[in-house]
Length: 240
View 1 (cartoon, rainbow, N blue to C red):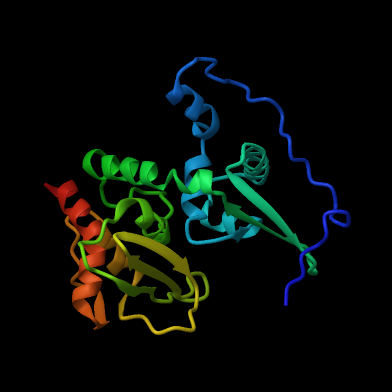
View 2 (cartoon, rainbow, N blue to C red):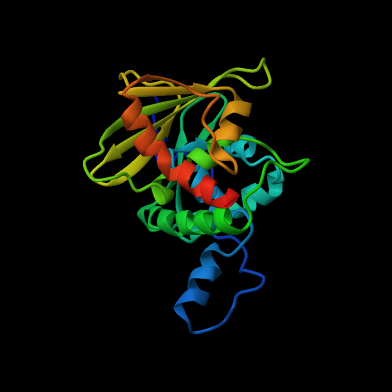
């Protein structure tokens, strides 16, 4: 069992970063919001914590374009601004988890709206040099997908292994009361449906046109299609 380090024993971590370099200094609610979330990487960090707490190294893995110093600085700023919590555990090597606060969870619809705009105006097949991690798209689900009335249940999305560099990855979309949550990794429960595909198959399904012909379904296919329609409908609009 993991044991939290009592505050008195925890090594000191700076919680107050330097003042922001370029605040908007404008008495306006949107400018105030952008003072907190307008920096590069901030919204993507929130997106990638939507599925639950992550360690520093895990955030580095899902945000390959960010430098170690940039990530450290941004996390310190977000903790100080009340967007994240930071929890240390008594482990060797030391473990520190970062997790969204309620303040930042309320930004998921904003991130979803930004994604819809991106689908409508910027979406295309992967560009040369772009990192491809379909989990980044799946983690938009809490802000992007609005399941039809009465649609409830868990759908597991499996990205098949492609050797040591790309191990199998599993994501669970949980629809309940008109909302979708996401979790990652193995689960003890049994999903109502499972959708499996290679990374290329998922790129085809999530890219312009939203073509799922390279995915395989088991269990309640209707549930899976109803939940995934939030992605596919947006992708089809991008191809129109």
